[in-house]
Image 1 (tube, rainbow, N blue to C red):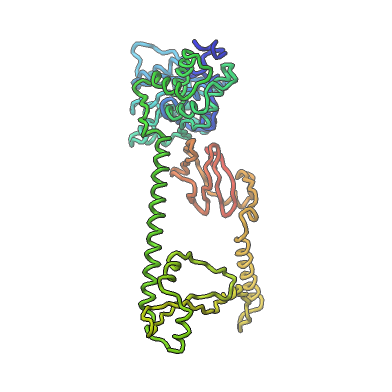
Image 2 (cartoon, rainbow, N blue to C red):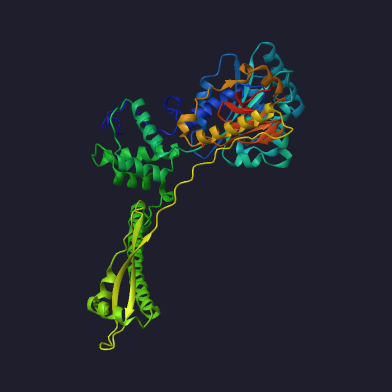
Length: 519
């Protein structure tokens, strides 16, 4: 293989779910934390979903590696079982002895119940993880729910983690499974990697294989992300094939051309290279060209319209002016007047001048048409008239002063005046930048809030907490789904939903609660 050529200790891009190669991106770290947080609660079911190849199984393997010794685990990889076969598989995983021949659902259920009670008496937690849970039949899921009915006053004796593709979410929306859906205390949907995370992901896997130099250039990383859409399994397939291609062609660094060729080999018919007119760079050039043409055409049309408007204004002005004037004025104006042809041209090409706002006197051009008996040719004289256009002074805001009124005490008048002053001060502060009024928040847990806050907050029961890696989530509070900004009761508002806690506001006081809690 190519391990010696690239100085690798082992193949870095295997699709096997090796926890050693787990790249803890923000999304995977949130998923693992969410699973642990769900297991710390008293609920029965925890849900992890994601698209094919996003790393769900790898996260579950990492979770199993971190389980304490006081936890007995049953892990099922093939869930395409009947209810009886599922119970028998659980017995095998938990090392429960039962009679193979003639075993019934009741017999197997009783055996599992006895094991759960025994583990609880010995302070051992029992955990069941089912991968590819989207293949479970509805009756099998209902049988799982019945197993979680065994509980104490504080916790369930069996905790179940369901791992599957997004179809599992649709399956749990069935009306006949609503009882199971209500017992899911934590949900997380794992999304693919973005482009910066992809670069870190490849660098991480190469470093685990003892390679500390860049084997993929920038264009190759961009192409890998475009083809794989950030799905780790596809990234591994493409990178492994690209390193093979680079080894065969004796290239020390993988570039875009090698990645495209390797993707066609690794993905086969699933990989379709877009035509040249569908490629991203081509689309950008075409969009820029169209935009430039539109701007040029708009500018050209606008210039023509301006010339046409100016011509119409001069013609209208000549038609609306009086045709007769005083002869005493005529003799003086004719001498100074210019021919219409000489004055119309500069008027059409003259750019408008905007006077400064500070000037108190502006000049207006007034065109007066005069006619001479000796010269029938119409003449135009440009006169200038000074017009006073002094801008009005800014009016200062009115100061309100409460005046004495018969029958109203001085104390009440003083309170009115104080309220007006407070309003004025608040308006002034509102004009300041946000940095001047913003104070850093120190969000405390509810147990550290004043007594009136703790006593005023109503009873809360967070039964479900759903948090996706895109930041959008919701909680099930007292049997109802709640989102950020929802008012629960008595002025209690959900301010923000985080992976491990929920920020709430009660009558102006902000505090935090764990994502799964009872109050």
